[in-house]
Image 1: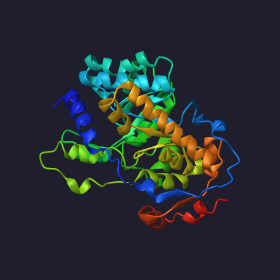
Image 2 (image 1 turned 90 degrees about the vertical axis):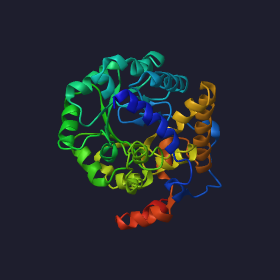
Image 3 (image 1 turned 30 degrees about the vertical axis):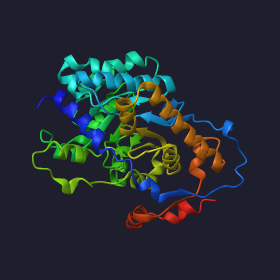
Length: 350
């Protein structure tokens, strides 16, 4: 199967596997503050993610590209990002690197969002030259290197050899003309991976946990004989943020992608240590089922929800959310305790 056909299938199956029901963010709750001593108007959504200064903590994360039918999706996503000042990442550009005829499906993003912060995207199998070609293709401000081992293993035509990933990431980081972010595609990250990436010099990591688009299910829908026992593989985004907190002294900024359903989830992720949150499947659904105006309205609602949470907690800056006590219960708490994470410290901050 050619890459263009695969990209179209990914979009179709992703829409059917996006999980909008209960997830691990329901195991996280704030303590109410009846005397917040702030106002909604004083809240600011400005944030810093590594070297980037952003107007919003919401990033439109990597989704698609590489086929004629995905050009319009990326155009709409870029319009949303432009109109609300959001950073945006394109989907894996390996398709265009190997077939220049589909470059336009990625280049449309820079055309629509000429002054925005854009991230190019390649897999960890990419060479330095391929990574730089991806950056040049969209005049990117940064580069995402994605990790998707389980997806590749379930993908009928996927990779089976993952040797040398860390060494290639380090080499690209050393030679790249733009900052490098490493992201998971929905299977989460344990502290060992985070530690190794930090030691390789990576200062922005997207933990990309379970809870949103399930790429194990996506690939199983493409297999003649699905391996459904792997559909629940990995750590949730909340699990991954708790793992990341164990490595918080390494100067790394974290992005939380996977299962962000609303602005309250975004606020919880930031309270757990994220500098920003990535949304992919939820925005993809907006541009596929609503017009651009509907998508903009949804983003405005999410921003409003973040600011309501901030106001109720007495936080006029996003960074102050990290000072808030959070209670973590349920299955998330069970797993955290097995990993030696002291949840009482999170609950008794104030």
